Length: 224
Figure 1 (spheres, helix red, strand yellow):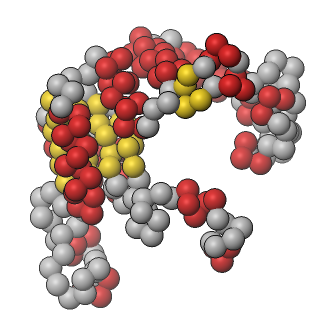
Figure 2 (figure 1 turned 90 degrees about the vertical axis):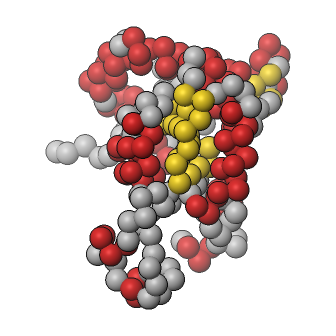
């Protein structure tokens, strides 16, 4: 019989009681920590590869550095850094010098600020906007009626080209800023350097998508 898919999002046990955090901890019948031993070992072997090992180690150190008061115990720790500072710290930990910035036209002002921020810390920046290439949406089979500005020339978002441009510049690390749903997926697929996300696009909430999550039982209840 086929085993049910893991669904950690529905785990009913308290965080400190879960087997993924505590030896001998509790777990549901479809827990991947219990039922996916072969994959656990396969992943561990990937972490032993030098490039992955150092990257993952520095990511763990970055997680540590996001808090203070650790010496007072877990209940007393406090976050101390916004994401943009954490990204800068991680870049320094990895020794990267050339950074790519893939951004949306709608966040062009934010992109200017972000680019200047990282440049001011001595990093070499290569940035590329979503509309790069000026390729018409018709090449995707989009009709005039399906455009945002109906019956006008409209340039498609071009995340594959964004990735290829940054690949050609041999960026060591890429930052995404506000790419659309789906476009970000294509960028990840084609980018050769590791990537992180500074901010995602959410046109309604001012690029704060968790606002809708936090209010699913109130203002956004119609989505359920």
